[in-house]
Image 1 (cartoon, rainbow, N blue to C red):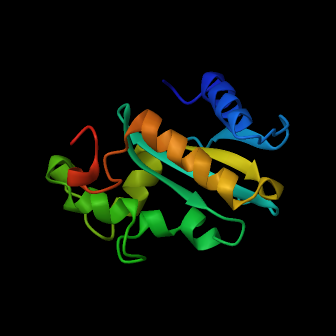
Image 2 (image 1 turned 90 degrees about the vertical axis):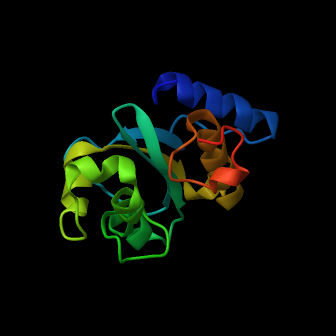
Image 3 (image 1 turned 30 degrees about the vertical axis):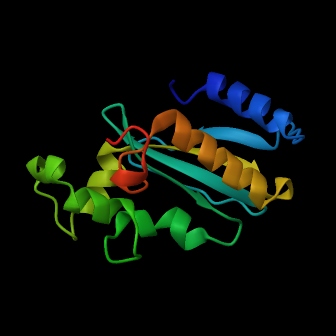
Length: 154
């Protein structure tokens, strides 16, 4: 399932099942384009997705006070314990691209698709967590979870 209007309808259906009823203005799907141009809006939370050649690599979340996670941590392998840049550099399947700590961030911005789900912070952190979990189940991102814990076992 591609990230489009169908996903938004599915999210609404699943949220409604647990008595969360967002309006169309409270959830938006934002394609960041290439290179990524991100804007973190006041009063919003985000579930971000990164995909490359149709394969989802990373899906994560940024609460209303997590601007560093949203803007920069996934582009710098030394920025945090778990981030997209570090996962790409450590992935033997990505060796073809000859990426390093100093080049991987720009490579991600220029070659990886980033689509974010923008969520009104008034919907709360449990809504943020649920949307992230739904997207994990839909897209099975390569760099999420331990291989032994995954149903698909990668």
